[in-house]
Length: 334
Image (cartoon, rainbow, N blue to C red):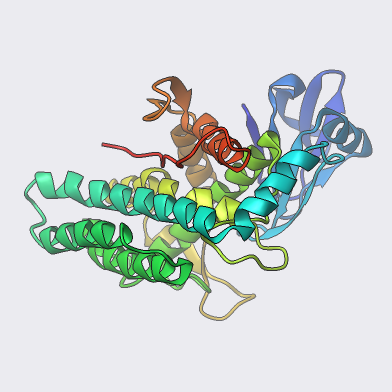
C-alpha cells in the first residue's frame, strides 16, 4: 500500500510500533505496516497523532490534506533535501526560451497523441463513427505543434485539442449523466466531478514523484508560474490524464459502477455536484489499481507501475536541465 488514503470521517491515524492503526471510537478499523506507506492522503475530518507526524517527518513521507470532496488544503513535508544545484539548473532551463519551448512542445505532443490513441481505440470498434473527425483533427494539431516556437502558441494548440477531445469524449459514455463539456470550477455533473477528483489525485501523485527526484514543482515549462501553483506537476500530468483518469471514468460510467444516485449537490457551493462517500471509496480503489498497474515504459523499455513512471518522467526533466539529455520523451501508449 504505497499510498494510505484516509476517508472515514472522525477516524484517527495512530502508530503502534511499526504499525499504523486507523481507529474510531475505540475501534480499530484497519492496520497497515508503516514501512509500506510512501504517502498519506487525508480527506476531511480525520485526525493524526503527534507520534505519527514525527514518524512521517523523520521518514520523509508526504502527507496531503484534502477536504471531504478532494479539494487540496495543504501538505506536511519534511525538511527539503539539498538539491540546490539541480534546482539552480532547473531555474536556468525555465528561463531559457529555447529549452522551455522544446520541453513544453514535447509534453503537449505526448498529451495529444495519447488523446488520439484513446479515441482511436473506440473508433476501431466501429461503434462510434463520430470520432473519425476528432481523430483526424488531433493528428493535424500534432503536426502544427512541430512549427510552434512560442509557449502561447503551444498553449493555444493544447487548449483547442482538449476542447475537441472532450467534445468527442461524451460520445464514449454509455450512461447519460448530463456531461456536455468539460467544466472545472465547479464541476456541475457527475462525469465532471469524477474527472476533477481524478485529476486532483493524479497531480498529488506527480508532486510526490517530483519531490522524490528533487526538482522544484513550482517551476514548470508549459504552465505559467504563479504563486502556489505546482506548474511542473501540471506539466507532467498532461500526458497521463487520458490514460489514467479518463480511462477510469469511462470504465466506472460505462459499467454503471456508479450512477446518478451516487452523487449529490453540495450544500457548501452552489452548482457543485460531488460524489457521496461510497463513490469516493470506489474511485480511490479504481485509481490505486490503475496507478499500480505494471506497464513497459516506452522510452526506457523497463517494467514499472504507472506511479513509478511519473517519477521516471520527472527524472527526464532532471537530466535535461543538467545537460545529460537533449530531448524530453513523453510517455506514449499504443
